[in-house]
Image 1 (spheres, helix red, strand yellow):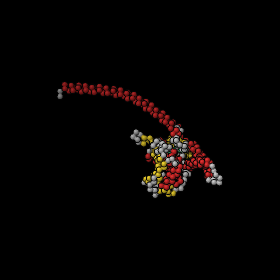
Image 2 (tube, rainbow, N blue to C red):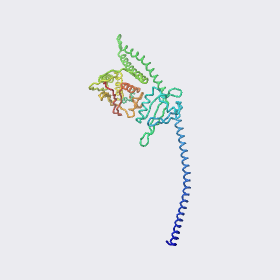
Image 3 (cartoon, helix red, strand yellow):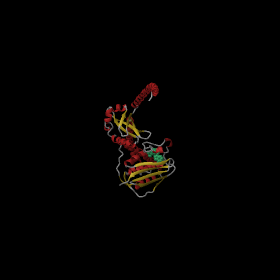
Image 4 (tube, rainbow, N blue to C red):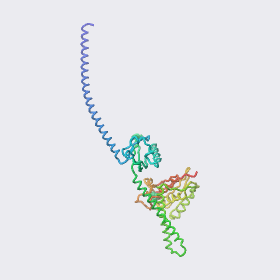
Amino acid sequence: MNAQNTEEQLQAEIKKLQLQLEEAHGTIEAMEEAKVEAVKLNDILEDAVAARAKDLSVSQEHFMLLANNIPQITWTNLSSGRFNFFNQRWYDYTGLSFDATFEESWDNIIHPDDLPATREKFNHCMKTGEIFEIENRYKRNDGIYRWHLNRSIPLRNENHELLFWVGTATDIDDQRKSIEKKDEFIGIASHELKTPLTSLKAYLQLISNYKKEVVPGQVKTFIVKAESSICKLQNLVNDLLDVSKIQAGKLDFVQSPLSIKELIATCAEHAGYMFPDYNIIFNPGADVKINGNTERLEQVLMNLINNAVKYSPLHKDIILSFTKEGNQVRISVTDYGIGLSTSQLDKIFERFYRVDVKNRIASGLGMGLYISMEIIKNHKGTIGVQSRINKGSTFYILLPLLS
Ligand code: ADP
């Protein structure tokens, strides 16, 4: 290699290094600029995070204020059933601390009489995801139990997966007490009414059987009318008594084997006398037997027939029937009257429920179906209805067959 070549090479090398140095300067400058930008960005981000955190703490504060001050106890629990939040109202009401709340067994908070039903309903809802709703008594910090209406709904995400449950307990003790007072009053009043009514009926029977002197025909007609009015009054008083017995959990009756064919035939015969304008149709098939109380089941069937007549003023056919369905019997009472809408169907078995006042075509107090349902429940059966507005209704009863 000669000396000239070496110098040229060195010059080229130096130039290359100078270029690299310049590039490096450029990079360093860019980096410094970027650093300044990054610092600025960081400041902006920090400000944003601080603002967001402030917003969050304000909304959390807002949420806690709301949760703690709504006039109800609220809670949340996980899908496993484990509770993870109670609002301040809970701690104030029960007098329990946070730790005690989560350690305390339900047995020490819920009234012993309400505990089994509460547990059963809660476990059922946790399993099925159905809305939890029950009335029960919670022990207050002074040891007194007060009635609460509990409602809890499952919250789900967009994939319909259950996130957690949100529940509330509303104090309904005052309402419950006034309902209990009213029930007690109805019980006493109907009992007091029953005695004079029974003797009135007995005196009227004595008068109608009076043979010593000739009773004028018009007086006889008045006696028949008075007897019919007294029967209606007696039915009303008996219904009121039944309602108060149901409320007190005392609607007891003995049960023994009975024939369904005979039961319905007896009611069809009564109905034939009572409603001579109507065609009471009953074409029985092979008989079946159940365990039940004849008097109470007659009461249910007569109530259904009575309703079929009341709510079917134009079409006079009423069909009674029964069929065996597995280990049950289905008894049906069909009319072709005014029928019921879907929204009414859900309510007609409630106590004192009557369909819209404007459309009332018959008198009544809305007790018959409620009493019927309780009697059927006591027979371990079910009662229901299929109906269409202006087409008619079929009320049915399912009862377990005698095994
Ligand atoms: P009541 O007939 O004394 O009002 P019920 O408890 O027997 O009380 O019936 C409740 C309500 O259900 C009635 O007010 C009526 O509106 C409705 N209902 C009952 N049976 C029938 C029927 N066969 N057709 C149409 N509506 C009916």
